Length: 160
Image (cartoon, rainbow, N blue to C red):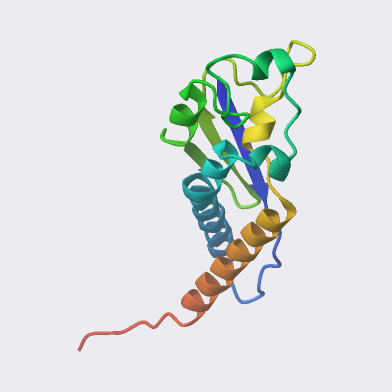
């Protein structure tokens, strides 16, 4: 089963920059930010306190009373989901307007659970706080501006 996470960012294209150059900058900014999210932010979903921070669905008493589950955060049961998502290699597809990160997960992790009352683990793994969203947007915008400035200051040197 694969869990997908998407991010979108809209910036205004400078008039002196080609469309092709602009699209390449946006692709790189999206790819870079999703790599950063996977390396740093995804781990936070498996720590204690993540349920209140990201708004996870409350777990049922039967689930919480299981011996393997006692004292662990909501997304940690046997460690399969953690090993597959955090330690695994994601597939990142970046486009000028958005990027998509796909992670392989165990079969019990799905974006749309078919059993009622079952938590949406895929949505819980990819949830963001408002501060994280603003931070990601600011990082992408800063990277885009830095790349635009780098392209504008490019110099061509001729030998001879």
